[in-house]
Amino acid sequence: MKYPGGVKVKDNNYIEYGNRGMSLEEDINKANEYYRLINRAIIYKKPTPIQATKVVYNKGKGKLIAEGYFKTPSTTDYNGLYRGKYIDFEAKETKHKNYFPLTSIHTHQIEHIKKIIEHGGITFLIIRFSSLGKTFLVKGEDFITYLTNKPKSIPISFFNEYAKEIEESYNPRLKYLEVIDKLYFGGKDHETN
Amino acid sequence: MKYPGGVKVKDNNYIEYGNRGMSLEEDINKANEYYRLINRAIIYKKPTPIQATKVVYNKGKGKLIAEGYFKTPSTTDYNGLYRGKYIDFEAKETKHKNYFPLTSIHTHQIEHIKKIIEHGGITFLIIRFSSLGKTFLVKGEDFITYLTNKPKSIPISFFNEYAKEIEESYNPRLKYLEVIDKLYFGGKDHETN
Image: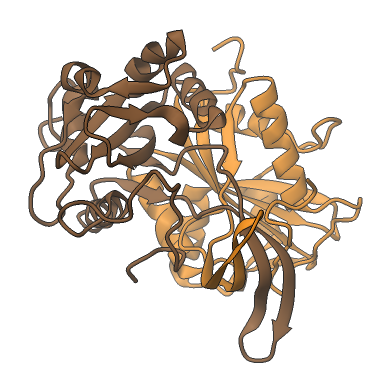
């Protein structure tokens, strides 16, 4: 199954595929599958929230949605459990080279990130600059601090200075938990913990 | 919004409404809303996973689902963050008075509950016997232990002995975090922690 939910819905500002033929969402889904397979973390993408406005009954197939629409998510896209901790994050891609536009992060999601910090969870954003071939992980705390003066975008210089680039590797490509180990667990990896 | 997702899909064994006019799902959603409002816990129901098989573009309304179906969930319905801990649970209602049939809990969900225990999360089931007007919270650990001999159902006596009944109150009716405080936080409540 290539696309969970069968479709891929993105804002127009965001591309479906990165430079190397895979979307960020796909990379993260594959990483999460891999982490579950090796029993390292239990992290899932939440299903896309939809509002079914018409449901019909079909013999053999059961209940079918005959009309529905996609809703704006009020939380982040991914959450789960890693090393006994609650993990919660959002992932976005941009084609821009110099900045990440904040229009793609909804107000509800920003409030959600603040709440997760307040309640002791680990929360972050994974931002891919697809034209640069770089994917950053930025801590929720640093992201929220940067929003204080209500900017419309975040310059690449912020990511270079405050975020950690996620190194790409094979199978899965985006091993973002390595960065989590460094940022939240004092650099100790899973085994030496 | 009474029904998140606009529809309510239940196995035929499970009723939509409890004795007092509200479904268990509705009671839990209201409790979660209340807990978020008073900033006590950040817990959400995951959206129902759907597979959109036909998406059309509608001027003004944007992308519409013209055909889709409901998928079997591979995890539990609810998760979130409480007192710094990862919380994960499933909720089910039964009309039976003497037992809870296990057909309504999918194999994937049982595996998921085991994983959450293994990784240090708090996981449980909320089971309502609607004919009895009783709602129980059973720890994931006790539930999994009971499944060892592959029973087809769990008798009410198990719930009376090993589960905790959730007391009903006003606004919200189902304050299940009181039970979580007792079972997982040594009886200390939120404030005295």
